Amino acid sequence: MTIDKSLKVRAALIRTRSVLTRAERIEKLQSTERWSEGESPVGLAKVRVYKLQMKKKKKEAPAEEEAGKGKKK
Image 1 (spheres, rainbow, N blue to C red):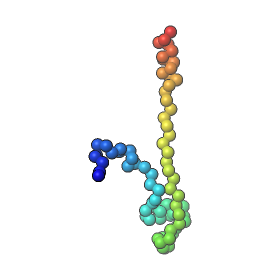
Image 2 (image 1 turned 90 degrees about the vertical axis):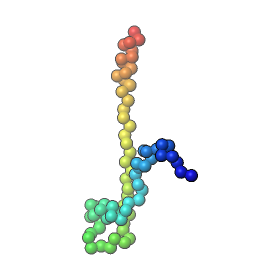
Image 3 (image 1 turned 30 degrees about the horizontal axis):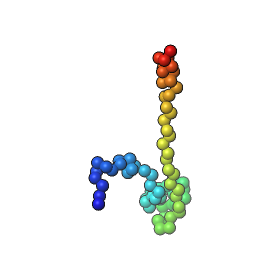
């Protein structure tokens, strides 16, 4: 049974992948000078995939609290 399109979470599709394709691995290895053009693409070295974390936005509570205190008096 499939899930209706309206019930799917769109943000679930946007995430970091834990596995890179061979071309992506070669590209990263070339940038760190660990792979040269003549080498075999079979048996590549491991490449760490860094997960990016979004920083949480700071709340603007102090400004709102000051405005609220002025109204209460």
